[in-house]
Amino acid sequence: MDTERRGWWVGLALCGLLLAGCPGPMGGGGIIGDASDFVNLDKDGDEAVTVNEFSKWGKDQGVLDAFMGNTKGEVANTALSQGLYDIWDVEGSGITEAEWNEGLRAWFPDADTQEFTSWDLDQDGSLDGDELVAGFAHTDLLRGWDDDGDGTLTMDETYRRFYDVFDQDSDGTLTSDEWTRGLASWNWGF
Image 1 (cartoon, rainbow, N blue to C red):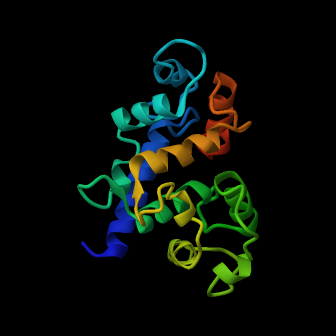
Image 2: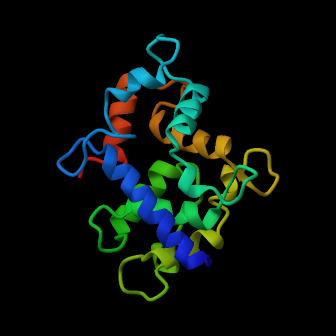
């Protein structure tokens, strides 16, 4: 399957996962997205979720299955970029500059300043999926997720970044309040 078609299917699969867990009118608290899922994440019952608990839960739920680039457990950058597009495009009409800024802030808080206009290749005021994929391909943003520097993203490295989005105070533990706020900031309640 070519990259464009694969990216589209991955985006569709991710969107389905997100909507299935959306507590709002479009979802029903399925795989992801319900505040009560925190109990399932907190395996040791200490009211705090570690990155290892979060990763195990995500693997058990198949959260990153749509991002897998091969059988070695690597995450495909194009598929990940397309998945981020689906998460950031709140209104469903292309990523606006405001959505893009919010997405970068939440997912790449330590990143160097990025200019929206340099990503908006057709200068129409919004980013489509291809523009977001191209933008990530020409920056070090996703490479910054590669903790061991081996040139590939593993599931564990990707779950670490997903976890960091939820762990808003960066203390290495995820509380029930951070889980609930994180769900809301991922545009799952729209």
